[in-house]
Amino acid sequence: LPNLLSFLLSGFIYTCGGTLKGRNGSIESPGFPYGYPNGANCTWVIVGEEGSRIQLLFLSFAIEEEYDFLSLYDGHPHPANFRTRLTGFQVPPPVTSTGNVFSLRLTSDFAVSAHGFKLNYEELHSTSCGNPGVPPKAVLSGGGRFAVGDRVRYSCVPGYVLDGHATLTCITNAGNTAVWDFPAPICRAEDTCGGTVRGGSGVVTSPGYPGNYGNQADCTWILLAEPGDTISVVFTDFQTEEKYDYLEVEGSEPPTIWLSGSNVPSPIVSNKNWLRLHFVTDSNHRYRGFSAHYQGKIMTVILRVMFLLFLPFNFSC
Image (cartoon, rainbow, N blue to C red; front, side, top):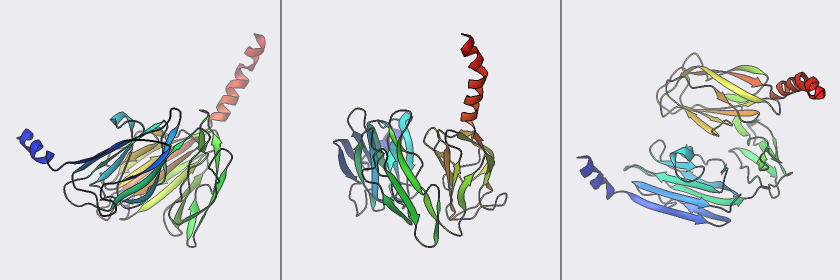
């Protein structure tokens, strides 16, 4: 019976994709903008020059939410390289690979479809940070070639407030690669949840906690520590509708973590001096939500203390 079912379904699988090379180009879902086919299983592999990175800049995005997905792989399309999974009708921010290979896989079920997606890809070299993107309701000024030393500044349209850093600078990290010093900020309506959180420690909770959160919530918190420090987040409670309500954590390792369900997540540590928490709920069912303690880890102070402790021994040698 499984073999028969597989044989019957195989006739409904729509395959497409391929390997793309070159400094830049574009990718569209099959049939864009009139709708991709049902049963799609399409994989694109973008290969740049050795030592380069690949940036994706989405121009349009409409994929049936929670049933059809665009999966991104930081490298070849292998589970070990899985980066994130995109679905829904909001245009994603730019995404940049860590190496010279980036892969995308579109999968759709056998029912409803949507318009699909269109994106541009570009090869980035070590001196370019790439386009940081313009979040909804935001205005971007400055930029130039988005090279090391360039700065961009964000502001919001009336009725919205900016969360995050208004100014981003393209810098060189420890790996001698150009990166933005902070993530692009967001613009949120003045009466919504979320915000920018500064300070050594504190607690972040879902709206209404310990009561149930509301439907259609869309909250973003930016946790900021001092330059050179890291941030750890320890969850004490976590109850969300599995697969439909989720907390996305960005700025850790791996770069994006998706949390959903009723299991208390493991502690998360940032790989820079910031973490971005994005909480999204759908229009059905409400749960208790989450509570998390955050703590800045003062790495610079620890290193200075160690240096002072070992300084006499260095001189005695």
